[in-house]
Length: 218
Image: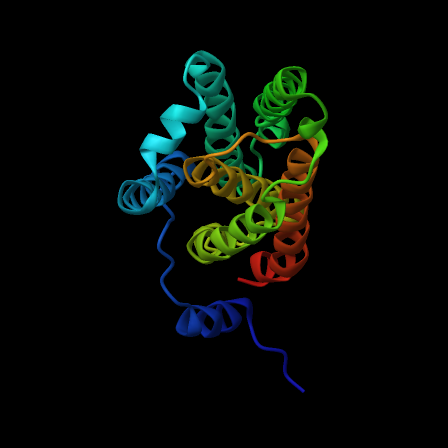
């Protein structure tokens, strides 16, 4: 049997080759994705939230509320951006830890707020508030955000999909928690905060497990 020449093999491969379109830089893809999330999130908040109840709840504590919201938003922005950079081979592994300081600040500020309410309200600071509704809100909102985010991330077909999925899941959960604050016109107790964290963890784990294969096989 005659073996085909190298030129014949190259010609055969070239005949079946499809044109490849280079992806835009990860910063640009992350920015367009974040803009989409922010626009739809802002529209939902503007149309459906109770701004008056929120102002009343945090009257006199605007600075603390602003810092907590900044930490939540920073977690979402950094996690989504980091997911796009982590999906590209050769990028610094620093991106995998980029959202962690903001996430830690979010937990500390939320815990401090719960402690302040406990001091002011006594034993009522330990009761279960609207935790079930918050869990459902975070999970449902994350489900809406997950589709476009994962689709955009899958375009890069990352070699290591798990870190990308974890970062994407954290970013999605953070944005869901950020939006939740505008529909949460009551003080958060420690039990509420624990349920929030369970919801966030559930979103991260589910997205990581379900989309690890989707990201890797795109």
